[in-house]
Image 1 (cartoon, chains in turn yellow, red):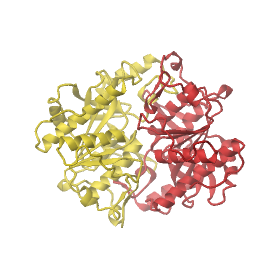
Image 2 (cartoon, chains in turn orange, purple):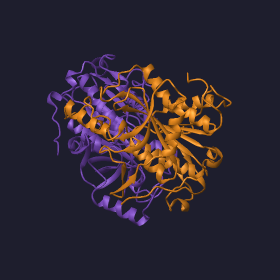
Image 3 (cartoon, helix red, strand yellow):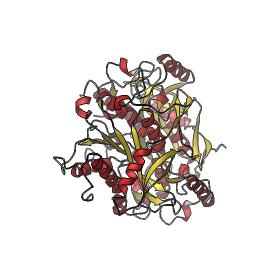
Image 4 (cartoon, chains in turn red, green):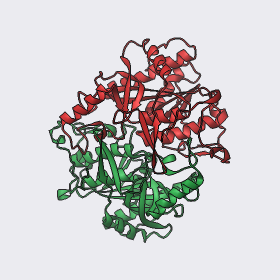
Length: 311
Length: 311
């Protein structure tokens, strides 16, 4: 069974669940928000950009960065965590930008996306662009390179996401918005101090055995078999590997959200498995997707090219 | 391909990776620990119990609770997060008890377990018992009931975990330690104020469609189909549903760790999908597995029955 990508009439987010209308209240449990306890249209109705990433600290830093980049009042002050009542996810806003953490892996990002998409629906948000800004392992690219995903693929290099529904497998498309990817690539040309490219992103359910690492608690394969697998991935067009993109692409696509995935490579997996760079180097790498997305949002808002770099 | 459960010689944790011995340094990246930067045997060599759960706040509260239950010096003081340099997981210790968060879903717990198992190996820990204390949806049981898992099953009710290794599927056993489950059930008889039972636990990759919820952003099935699926699960022996147990059972089993899963049910899924209880009620529910495990650890350490309840 294959489903098609959703169409969002009038720019609204498209929830595909006939049961939602008949619910008197919707509790977004893992976000600690709800339709009766919170005025979601007032809190979120003007959101135009949603940025998501694994780490809560990084997504707080991104919101603070956007406060400064957009010249918003209160820049430099501590931003409140909108989901403070739950420690499952963290959520911050800076003007029209919402910044949310999703933890690691497909199940964790799926829970967040289901509740986020319902939030955007209840809040009557329109024309929302959603971007995952993450970290990844690179494949045949320099550490610190930023990859804009054209297609998210699974561990067999196929552009599909398999979702179990009541015990049966449903296959979903993992297409992302091609125009948005090109727009982001054009933005990257303004930023000279790191390489940015477009490529396929492989999404796995596991960081160690699933990504062919030799340094997990279990490893039953040789270094040769590992490299043979990674080279096959490279030949199929894969330029980086992470753990959320297929589910992200599938869910956002079905709900009519224009979506992109922009991840920095923390290492080149053809060169090794362990992440050995210093905290300082890794921190600077993680700012790269943030700087690119800040330039993109400034451009979309007509604020001209990005000013200073993040500090 | 099926693998067999590991045997741990001399009570040591059994890593099954011939490459580890030849590594000069092992960086446990997501824990922000390493063999060169930290004296792991000195920090962790005397650990006998490892308790893991999804929420970082809950796992800190559990470590503080164990400080009091074990009558340790410094009880009541704030415990330091051993993984403070990373916001992926949180780790606390109270005497011989290590308390670690694992986030939500199989990929997230897998990363933590690979690094934890290597940590226990590097630290030369012996005779370690590992217990997941979590939250779950109940199936035909009262909200607040505690389920000790005898067998973790997948969404087809099968006792197996499918791990992708270099693009191929490897099937692993999800057996848990039967004697440990019985010992925990015996401990529960001391605690009269909530029901505890042994049953199968179903583990899914998704909270909404994967668990048959009608309240996600997407839902393509009827209430009747949902209940038909959940009743089939009940008839197969499933008493609760969560998102980590199969991977936890498989990885711990292969590495020779005696493992148990003890989860409280936050609701009965045959009655509904949304988690509607108040924060106070949910907080008290979440203490129930903690109180059971505290009684178990006190008994193992010869400290006699548990004194007061957690406050």
